[in-house]
Length: 120
Image (tube, rainbow, N blue to C red; front, side):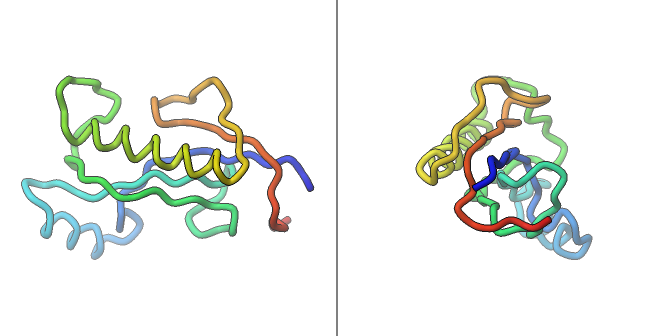
């Protein structure tokens, strides 16, 4: 087994499709959208490999900066909870979180041995 690395990214549901993003905005309240954290190999796009972990969704304001840690913020608290849940899922699957974070507070990296063959 080769050592693998996963990075956690934040994505907006429907963010890659203007019609889904518009529907998400219209169905949300006050310009909110649904987001989720996704762990995938560096440089890969959504659905690029089987070694991906997708977290539960949470609402957020489309123009809200999640790096702005204004307290209290119920949506930010839920985002942190969703990140903890994804991290726990990764650890349970045998991945190990690296101690440093990337550019954002949610920019976590995990290393481990992939039990499945991964593309080239």
